[in-house]
Amino acid sequence: MTQAAMAQTTFERRPVVVGVDDSDSARDAALWAADLAALWEAPLCLTHVVNRAGTVPAPKSPPWLREMGAAAERAGAATTTTQVRCGAPIDQLLDLSRRARLLALGSYGDHGWSGMLAGATALPLVADCACPLVVVRGQSPGVPPPRGGPVVVGVDDTAAGAKAVEFAAHLASLSEHRQLVAVHTWSELVRDLAGHAHRLDADPSELGRRGAEVLERRLRPVLSQHPELRVERHVLPDTPLRALLDHATRAWLLVVGQRRSSSEDEPPLGSTSRGLIGFAPCPVAVIPPAPAAAEALDTGQMHEELRR
Image 1 (cartoon, rainbow, N blue to C red):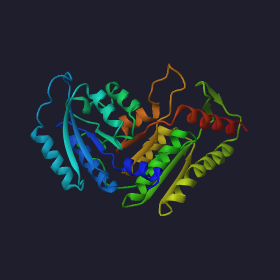
Image 2: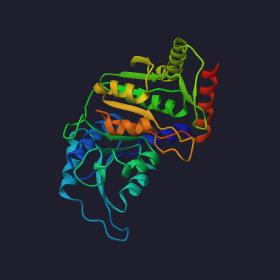
Image 3: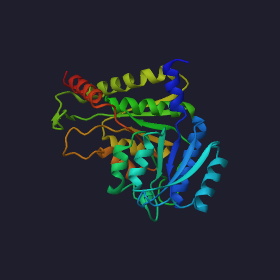
Image 4: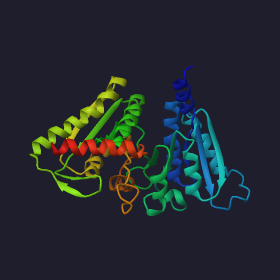
């Protein structure tokens, strides 16, 4: 076996980790992740974090956690484990994300950290997660997340956007519908690498044409790998948040890339990701950023093309 094949095999054996408590939202997240683990034929690990000092022995697995694991197995996750860890929940889950293929969490809850993802408490977890992170949510509290539908992805001309498209296309190719909805938005206002806004001196029809070129360039490599996909293309003069929320109403999953902040004064998580986590009617996947050098190169290329 080649070194590349060994690395791929190791990655595929990484577990899908779900941070859970005894809320209905966490149970929904576990069952949603069980579906994904079954598609990937990957192990599923349900983790409950107790906020105690690391020197205190972890309590025994509670009955609700064992029952949740059994429900995940019935949902199709063949290899399911449960564990209880002690410590600060965010720190513990960030540690697990370094060895996980994906980390999933519920977005609603009556108590505990799993119910606070839409607030500032959990933003460091979303911003620093080392693997793709999915916030599992339905249209409102008490409504389970969708279990089917297309994968919707936000497409831009950054390295983060390329990783999001790759991830979304892969999951769409495994899903029942094999449908990918690719959304690219454009505006006359763009930000440079320093974060300053500039108005482009270009006709709107030209900006739309350039946006279509960006979309096709990002889709081309993934469609060569997944020719079976049915793809909807949308190039819109709108904000990414508003356009993605519009298309999320029928989605199984909404995927966005996490761009690196260009300034220490900016929040570590972009406004689009923050808005989707708070308001999307379906699960939201935030794909971790590419290395800073690659991100800067891709962003610089985009700004140069827009000025032509």
